[in-house]
Image (cartoon, rainbow, N blue to C red; front, side):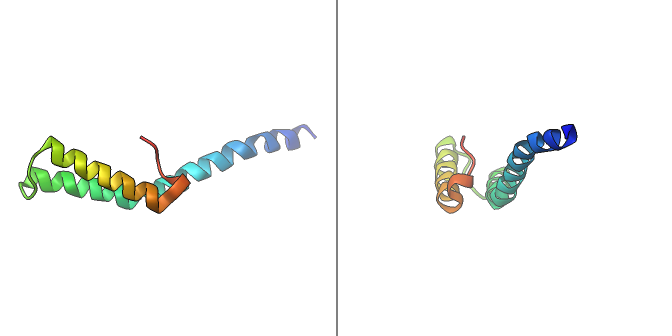
Length: 75
């Protein structure tokens, strides 16, 4: 009976970990977009500007929140 209780106690932690992994997978396209933006800036294709970077991040974060809803990451 002890083993059953130990197993049951680990279920919420396992579910939380699965939700975190699922959230990371869903957020992957947004991370790729951020990486592409950074590479474009380094290559000189996009203006190197803190204001432009902040605007891009704000727009992308809003899109992530809208698309993923409660599964989106909070910064």
